[in-house]
Length: 239
View 1 (tube, rainbow, N blue to C red):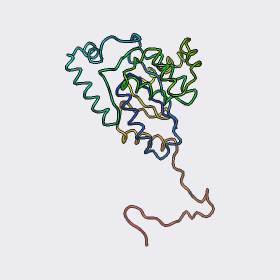
View 2 (view 1 turned 45 degrees about the horizontal axis):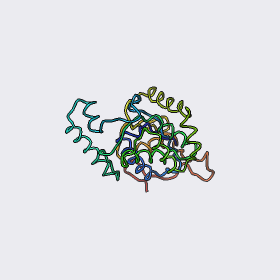
View 3 (view 1 turned 30 degrees about the horizontal axis):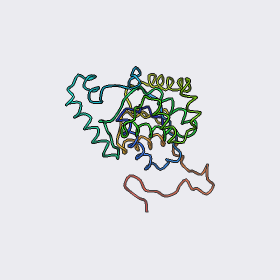
View 4 (view 1 turned 60 degrees about the horizontal axis):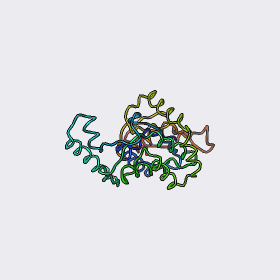
């Protein structure tokens, strides 16, 4: 089973959604048969490498609210994050352009380290106050997850995986994805937002049933099956 997740590394609900999905996956009976692919989505493709405004100042400016209202909004999200074991530090968060961060995730995925890199980038931004759009942050994260420094330098110096990022974003447009996180299971079931583990688990089970329909055993398949085998139905049993 393939689960594709569109998200951005500076999206708080994406980080929360990641934890919710991990909880759902841990309860899924067929979790060892699930492949997860992280798909790129930029909340602000035109963002500079590093913003000068604080998170609350950015929110106030973008949505026309006061900084006090923005602070209340981030406090609410922080509370939800705490419930799933995340430590959001808006006071030190340094937002910026995430295009290169997405390129790094694609590079890491070629080594089976896509999820680890996604996690490390989100932790760097939301908890450790690392400037997410700066090269030094990406190199530090790459080293933490075990990527080869020379390969990372070569990729970041050039345009490696840029087409992959744009392809993901084009796919999002084709699928009508305009907000993240967004989960697509086996290219058949779409789940928008940071849903609860129960909702995500239900979607996984539904997708599994859809792609693995139950085959009824009968005498045509097994020699010693008797088609007239006794059974109970409609609340009654023949005895």
